[in-house]
Length: 256
Length: 381
Image (cartoon, rainbow over all chains, first blue to last red; front, side, top):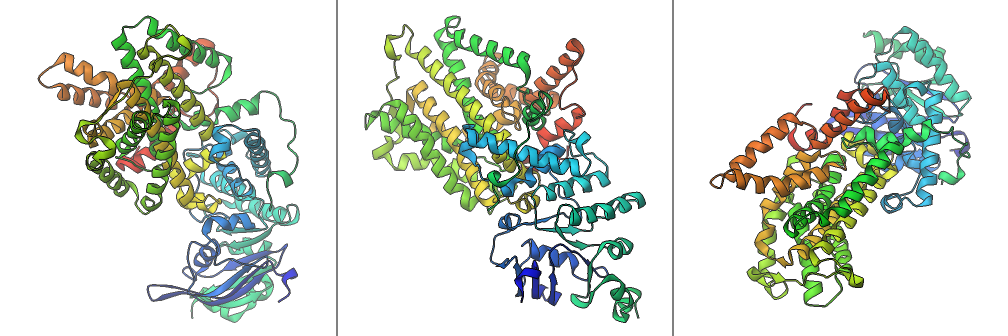
């Protein structure tokens, strides 16, 4: 496999939950600089696949190669360090913290200082704190959240919370961004805004995106490639226009 | 590896606002007063001066009482970091207090090691024991961790009696009270007062620094949402064990000071009741706050004494009633109330808006209790 045009390679991934097969030998690749959409009816295994990539679930077989390194042997907390950052389907923010603090945690994986250097407030810790602050503010500005930076995260509108999560993921300066239903719960304008934002993330920030989404219009608009799952199996892969015409995809969505 | 150095150069920051905001960060998370602005620094300096002059206005017994407040405050600070900021629970910190006390007693009396080194050794030993205890304890959550730590507290007096060739068994160990160095014209009690006060100031400063930086955010992130914390790259197992170790270290250092102040250690003073007392102090003071440790220390030092004065027959009933009143009037601890008063005063006198500005009071209160509620009582805010 030519490593230089594949960023993420998912190979024959199988996941079982107490006998139920959630993913059955799924294989696909994500090319760098692309937006790849991962779609499928409810329960197709999209989120399960995501959780394998961020090491929340352990596949019984298969391999995941990211940037030439195998992902499955790594502990969960090492994943963002490699350059994979994610958002969650049902939001996973830190409710007692401000927006800025939430996004500052996104920079955690890119920094090193620990308990002692911070307790003693050594110059190195201060420099790193400044770096974290700058990086977080940059991501906050990119997501147009600057006016809310010092606001408590808890209690903000749902669409805003989604933007905070995205800012937090971007603050990790990922090579690959995993977005789990970023359009879920958003209104029509917010979805339009999101599609512009996703293109900007790809084109301006040069970040590859793997997108799980139910919102068909959004996926077909922004994706360079679409992968379709159904009952844990990959049933189609290709450019949006081609996938939309695929009879098996149509059957999966409309039923027999 | 992409570290801070390879990142884009930090641009010169606008004067004023963002720095204030950065300093305000911890304030946003704690029920304690926010260390910010020249006025606050002035108030802190005034408090420090009063504290350092206090022994000259007090009787020797009162000086001893305040010494105990500071010592308890150091111990409670450890507990606050663990429970309030990290969301881990401990009903066994009395055991770390005992480890600190006995380390100091054994080192100073049996090995003739200067007490300064003994305090440091007590802290390091507690750090190590706490860290090692924290590793397997990670498998327990919430109330299960509480029970595991409670087992530690229950076992401690008997363990101390068992190793009687070291610990002196039930008889305990009598220590020499350290006298003032450099021929300072103060009594031994006054000297220990200053020693404890200084250790407390250092402990507060270190805790404040730790909690407002990268490590502190990770500690709180684990409390708020452990899965998201790991997804941000926080090594949660390591952080939880380290936090447990740091917490134990604070309490161990307090135990070392306690042994010096009382000049005596015996197994039964370190019963499980001490651990529960610590928990009471932490919660009453304000568990997700740094300053709360001082209020909590004052509570567990003074309230039992006053309860005794009110009713010789049933002091614990009086203590219990006081406790309930405190919890009812100050659901976020004394520190939470103190913060609300400070914010209200600022607003009415100076007309200053509290920064970080758009934060609501309820969000603050939620912040102060959220971790605790989840970790301790499972009680909705």
